[in-house]
Figure 1: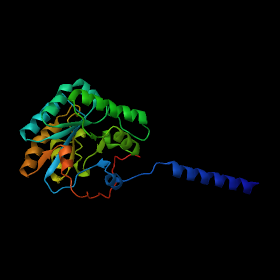
Figure 2: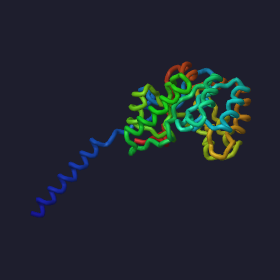
Figure 3: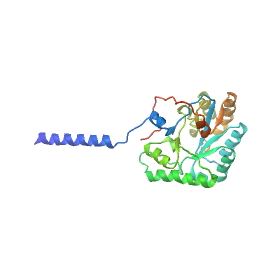
Figure 4: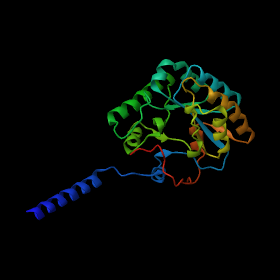
Length: 256
């Protein structure tokens, strides 16, 4: 009787393990998503182009300062905006468009799309901002950036349904300016790692901090001096050539 019970338990345990193995979502690495064209980290090219991206705005104090600096150095950027901040500051969004920048989707409420977030919530967060941007700007931008870089197959699939491609950032160009690490830290992070085809992650809304604005006063003239042109994600993508190299390290923010 005891032997029979042991075998029953073993079969049950094996069945559970098999069921878990087949029901768990398969994990994919950067190479998988890049090969399918579903996620972009950076863009391979021989030209000296770099895309600057600004997340979490608009901000009534810092975003106009960022825009003035970009205008001064004839630079263009992509602003990944938050829906509830579009509601508060639609005129700043319109100014971004009027000055030749592009405005992209960064969700309505800056929710991290971890594995427990429902498809309904993801769809609402993306869809709401899509509608707001159409109403405010009259334009549609094909880029979506999930807050914190949290993404998975579900997020990518829903973004596709709304006509978006997921845009992240170059692993070596995460300025971490949202931590307010110091002006020189932000500037050095960007300048020491600047490469053709980079997508630089910055923020035009960091609560109580203007370090990013001050760092731009160092970054922009130096990159221009080196011969780089600072462009939108769309322009960077238009100059893509060949296939990107792959970092062997897994993406730290990736959620499955």
